[in-house]
Each structure stands twice: as C-alpha cells, then as structure tokens.
Length: 184
Image 1 (tube, helix red, strand yellow):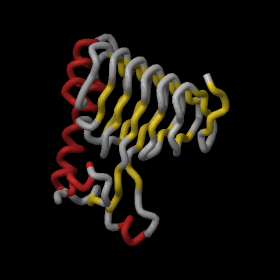
Image 2 (cartoon, one colour):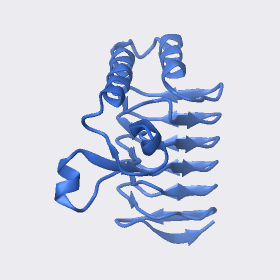
Image 3 (cartoon, helix red, strand yellow):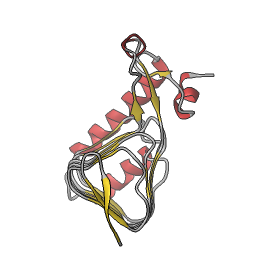
Image 4 (cartoon, one colour):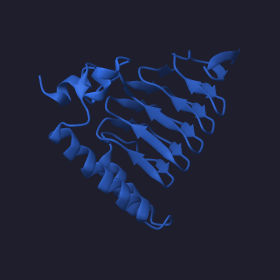
C-alpha cells in the first residue's frame, strides 16, 4: 500500500519524508500562493484557481484571501459556500462542506493527527481522518475542527470553539471542547 493510500485510509503514513506526497503539497502550496497574490477583485481568477485545486465545488462560492491547504483534491464545497479570511484546511483526508456553509475568519479544519508515542511521531508518521460539515452551517471566528469530526445540518458553532467530537444537526455548540448548548 502506498503512503497516499494509507493516508486516505486513515492509517499511519509517512507525511514528512515521502517524496510523492511532498511533491503534491508543494504543487498545491504554489497554487495557494498564486491565489493569495491575486487582486481581491479578480473573482474569475480566484474561482479558476480554486476549481483547479479542489476536488469539487458548487457553482457559487467565495473564499477570501489568504487561504491555505495541504492537498486540495480532498476538499469538496457545496453551493453558496463562503469562507472569510485566513481559512486553513489540512486535507490529508476528505473535508466535505455541504450547501450554505458560512465560515468566519481564522478557522482551521485539520484532518491530520499524530501518534502520542514520540518515537513514532519523530519518524514523521501521522494519520488523517475525514471531516464532514453539513448544510446550513455557520462557523464562528477562530474555530478549530479536529480529525474525524462530523458537524450536522443546521448547526451554529460559536466563535473560539475547538470541535473534537461530532455535533448533531439542529444545534448550537460552543466552547473548548465544543459542546451543544441549545437545540434549534
């Protein structure tokens, strides 16, 4: 099994020293650099680069600059997607956003995790678990979503939250760790 296959299967893989994966990350980081250097008013140029980077997009999306990701092809966004400044998506595994998702500034979606054992971690090993965000979701500023999390439909995540567990549909959740405080 290749390191990429291990990565996508959620198994431990060589994230730091595998030349093939490094090449893919450099390619997308160059694309993100190009994206972030465009004039903010160059909507068509920005749209074209995102469509080149992402695995799937809806017809209507806006991602404010700056934006960074690790691979790009693992990211899917639905219709009417909006992400404010400083979105970071570490997409070593799938990161899927539904329709009508709004993300405030300085948010991160991190599929990657690392072994607790320092010897394994120091070898450059990590794992990656998918993240799924449903439809009609609003994510407040400075939110971090960790590996393997699913956020349901019609959810509001409060600013500053660290989402380390699934959040059910039709709820408001806040905090570190993020917890449901209200049903909608």
